[in-house]
Length: 365
Image (cartoon, rainbow, N blue to C red; front, side, top):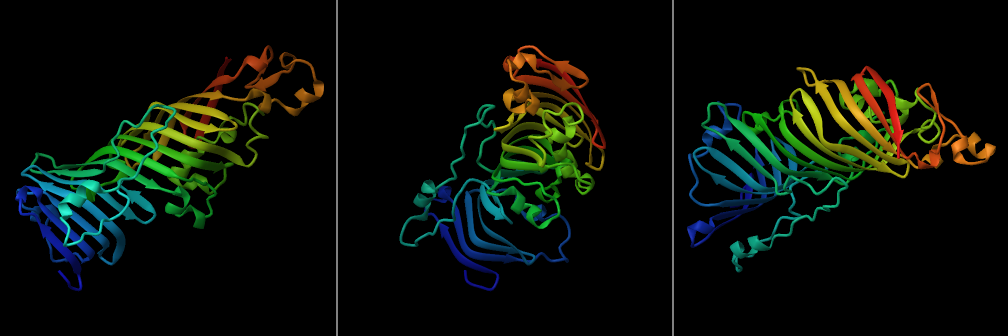
């Protein structure tokens, strides 16, 4: 195959059960406005052999999507794209590292078994990932209500760059990002909408920085939600413990989250954990959304484990004596006693994103 819109090779095994391999240098596709109905209607009722697709370059409607690969299987009820690997901007989809080069002199069906996959670090404070990293997309058709399912991994070495924050006025920073998703939505794959997803997601994020509250962040929905996790903004009016340490904003070396998602709610299934040299912060609770998908209300219990000596006011060191003689003012109360033994505090955060409330519950060892 060698033309303006497609170039590559097709390999058909002598044993049809091994299937067909399409290995392309490029594929250029421009949809026709004359086409009516769903593209899924053009798929056959079934495919009696496996199909593996590889392309080093894909261009759709003049948009460049880079290299992609996947395996296709079709029956009367499900169209499946499995072992998906590709890129979209600076996001990486799937776990394969590269597109293989096939040699016509070598059996390409043997090479499929040796493809290199991305190794995902399974080390998590909350336990291993519960969602497989193999990335699959399935369209369930011929049902009373068609729906699609996506399961697998999306990653980027720098989330700030991937979503364009480095070119914006917003000062939120985020580094390496792994997202594992197992979600479904109504309609075909092209109808995917973050506001209509149901299922679960798990993610790990490194090097997060949230600046102190500004007018700009209040107008961007996702940044309004991110601001909730800025310790200094939320708890600063209850205690001065955080003001000096987070004067410029809140930093976390690592964030881990396990979430159940639906069109009207995000809820933690395990604690959302922020870890840094400043302490460990665990959030358990939920976020509500309105019909348009905008985040509206929150309700979280927060447990902070702090190196308390680092948080004591400067006058504690000046006064000298045992730490138990120093008082820490929190939420209208002065806490004395064996402060060197108090390491964790529990708080509650709730209310509208435009009027967040916080209250201190207790210190404990």
